[in-house]
Image (cartoon, rainbow over all chains, first blue to last red):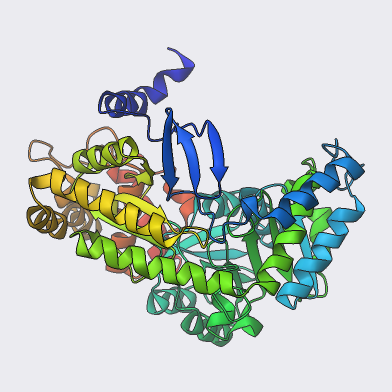
Length: 407
Length: 83
């Protein structure tokens, strides 16, 4: 028996994928030329799968802030927040997040994944019950498990199912924590937060909203789905990431709860990890200011999302959700999804390939994420290359549309 | 009463039929992964169907321990009795 025997099945499946072309889960961006372009396999490629929603990775203000922070604070912190890793910059960013979200307090984590781990394992304990949306991100699943709480899944975006379950669980656990996301990462659909908020109130539960894909994208000020739906007061805790609209790496939790900062001494994923490096923290500070000062970025991303959505529909593709910066195209099966993904990459378009079991309901997806930094010409070019692939998929655009519709 | 004879077992067999290949006969020892080839995501969907059918909640913490049909019968019975 070998330690790696248990992975034989998945390794075999990966091997089959490689026979069809490039490695969809190991694409290497050799050179970045802008927020939306890279050299991949020696080819100029338009990036349509990087979650770089506002295109801030190359914003001069963010790059200058990162550079200045390296010069002032060095390359890394060499320690955890509770030992030697709290810098003035960390405090400054936490104050900026709290101010941006109108929250009493915020704490930062080195990655978005750890933000969910730290928040969930910190907030809930073995005597509590977590009710999580079934389509939640893996970081939420893992955070729930780490908390030791009783974890119940409810049907995706289904307030009635949540209500029924809370009714059944009335006598169980000390506290109930409901966990949902603003925009779901795979299909790009939004949570009905107003309905969840009402249920939360009627059952005396707590509500955590992960705004990873909605921060900077939704709401009049870019605060996310809860701002857009006018229910921020009902959200007890917000989680977010720096690696999407903020163009860096890291994550945060924020709350109005007066005891929130206890998590700094009670949440192991916060306490026992090295703190965020100065350059990341500084670029995120600059990125928050960009979001506040440049509302046109949000207009631009929605214009681009609509243009790409319309172009893909016109090319005959089947899209899973209404317009959003995440556009998930449903392909009829794994073979055609892998084929289309490879043909797009060969034509200089990078999107994400998403296959079961990593997708809801076993769908095979080409997942696009739109950026405010995409130009009109790029969006047109992406649509043109997609249309070409649609034609290749089934001998003609209309036949491709019929096939996609059947999926 | 033997497991094969009770109503709960028969109900679960009915739910599981669509997951079972034609050549697999369901018994209390039928394994979800080995015999029925149910992956982690399909297992979650199956659990939700079972929850709806019996009006119960099966914590995820218990799902990873479910190996075979008998395990599922035990968990469902436990949740029904705990209501």
